[in-house]
Amino acid sequence: MKRRNFMKSAAIGTAGVSLWNTATSPTDARAQVSGGKYYTFQNINRKWFLVSPEGKPAYLRGANHYGDGTHMPWNLKQRYGTVKAWRESVRDRHREWGFNYLPPSIGPSYIKPGPGDDPEKDIVARTPEWSAAHFAELEYPFTAFLEVPKQYMAGQDLPDVFSQEFRDMVDNRCREFVEPLRDNPYLIGYHFCHNPPWHPVVPSFIWWIENTVKKGQPGRKRWVLLMRQIYGSVDRWRKTYGMPIKSFDEILELSSPLRDYVSAVDGMRDQLAFMERICEEWYKVYSGTIRKYDQNHLLLGDRNTLHLHPLATHAVRRMQSYVDCICVNVMGNSDVAYKELEQVTPYWDGPIHLADTGANVYQGGKIKSGFTTGDYQEFEDLYQSLMQAGLDHPQIIGTGWCGYYESAGRGGIVHVEDDSPVTERVEVMKKWNFWMEEQYARKFRESVRLDKMG
Image 1 (cartoon, one colour):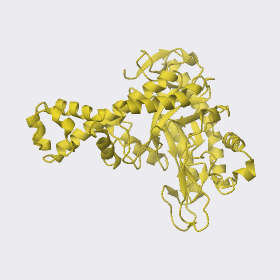
Image 2 (cartoon, rainbow, N blue to C red):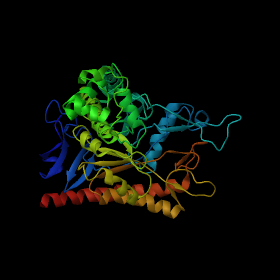
Image 3 (cartoon, rainbow, N blue to C red):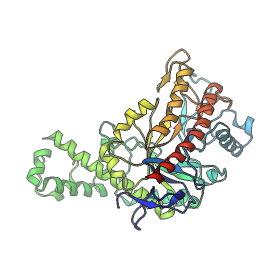
Image 4 (cartoon, helix red, strand yellow):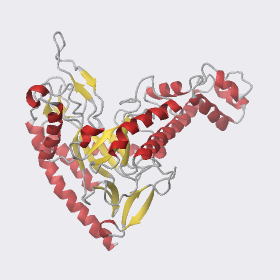
């Protein structure tokens, strides 16, 4: 895979505009410049913009986690009659409130408590992403998750990415979801999964490696290859792992090939090196398979929750050849976002999407997890700062809010019980969404003007 490159283009009337053009060879997985039919990233006067098929700048604004209608809202049938009518209401409210796209539907779905349930305890389920047809029928801009092998990459059952089984899973999902959308002008791009554990502070980091190097797995062979590369000789390998083997091939039969009896420091170095190769294969398989079925839309990669799951530098560097944008989840105002983005910005020059941002407003009682503002003035200041970040920061191209439904004090904008708006929050967002629409168009025009002047 080739690294990203820029192509000078006469797009929108200026020869100085750089398009995010990464399909300069048949093997390059990222998005082609598609003649204005689809969303593209454009770098104009050293500022990244997402540009619509109509040639207009689109600073992404939308509300996440609205679910699939099976659990939220609790009165869906009484209010809407059908799930389709409810889906249309989610779209229509986004338009009315100054948002401009539907983020992915997935996330915690809050279930109505039953008899004997503790009303203070969250009762949640994770619902799958909408189908391609359900997104397409709304004729409204959207992004979506492919969520293979799972929505949230945690636990001890993560895949061996070097296996044919993993490649087949991704292929089947892309054939089901990606192929029907390949010519859809409303689709912005595809997310892969939530929070692959690239960093060793995340418990699933070692679990993923252990699952990959199980005896008989293709990943075990890749581990042995890495050991040959790092150590060169079995004698040197023994100074870290201690086991009395006579050839590297014997590692294929060991019950615990990761046990670093002698040097835990070197063992951790080896694990980091192997996770870097898992990362490379993950993005290679995902991006290549998407491009097999769709040459037109943006590859948005995974969504990485920076405040909970640090994003390893090796992952940022490895994904550069395969994704068009880095997408992050950060709770708080723009200063918090800028601080968390220091995990990314020293190593990545492309677009960044604040895909899941949010804050609650403290209203007494027990404080829930997450970023909590003291009052509605602070809440408004926070939301305004996220819009301002899209004007000030050279890489930020949008925000997604966490989330659409409000339950248990987590910052949503629609009550899960009866589907009514959380009026104070909606009015704040509506005000600054429409402000941003005007200011972003002005910023775009000014960037084009300055770019023409050189």
